[in-house]
Structure formats: C-alpha cells, structure tokens
Length: 208
Image 1 (cartoon, rainbow, N blue to C red):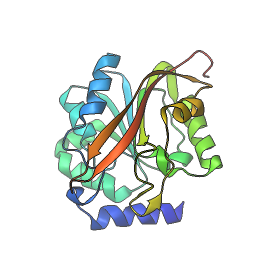
Image 2: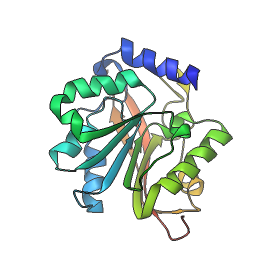
Image 3: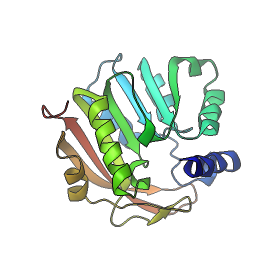
C-alpha cells in the first residue's frame, strides 16, 4: 500500500488538473446517470478515487446532502478542500486505499470512474468486489467506469486492467444486476482520446 500511496501523493503534489488525463471540467456522464437513478437529496453517495475531481462540486450544486469522497492521496483531498472553501465542511473525507476501506454506513450510490482498473491482481479485485457488495444498500446503485478493451493499457505510469461489457458484468454478477452498459470516449486535457467502458449496476437480493 505504501508504494501505491507514495505514487499517488507524488502525482497530485506535482501535477495540476490540466496535466492529468482523467480531468473533466464537468462530469456529464456520471451526473446524467445519477439523474436517471432518481435518488433523494439525502441519499448516501460515495465517490471512489474522487481526488480533486469536479464530481463533488456537481453533487453539491444539485443539493445532495450526504456525500463521501475517498482517495488514497491525502494531498488530492486537501486540494479539493481548499478549492471548495467553506463547502468542504459539507463532505465526508476519507483517506484510504480502496482495498482497505471499511465503511461505517450503507451507500445508495457508489461512483467509481477509473479506480477499479488499477487493481490488476486477483486478490485486490476480489477485495474490491467484497467491499462494494457489502457497502451498498439493498437496491442501491453502482456506476463503474474503466478503460475498455480499446482503451489505454497504462495510466499515470501504472499498468491497468481493461474491461469489456461482458467481463465487467461477470465480475459483479453475484450481487449486482447490470442496468445499463456503454462505452464512451473521454478527451483528455491534452486532446488525446481514451475509450471507457461503463456499467451501471443495481444491487440484487442476493447481496448481503
């Protein structure tokens, strides 16, 4: 974990948002999916690997009241807090490796855009699947985005694991029903294209 943490602390300490590939000015895809889920404003929402992304800003703007942001990089979260100013007090901040996360509440919406694909070993993938299965409330929702089979093989100097719609569905089939899956091109701040695989899931009655 320390090696991973050091890597990401260094990334966020040395690069501005316009210098990393995942930056989005507005998280349109995620917000549109969230709108279709039709959650109450008091729903528990967590952004996995939220870093200093603009997803939390968009959630606050829409009036969501119970927001958690998890990232392995403390520097990333501190930068987000500074950007948000007084609004930072409205968010629950968690510094943790996702595979070490032990949530204290059940979440109605779990959002992960580009964390899961950094887990390349079977054990870490299994841990993630167990954690997300336990953390989401019955009938809760889960939106996952990874690099597709037409996407990059690396990100931020690290190997990633690509997913197809089928492999993503199979990974979570035990406790989740896939509601909507699609691919999408993301244009990076430096005008390159990354193809993402997204799947929106709903927790089924097999989940604990």
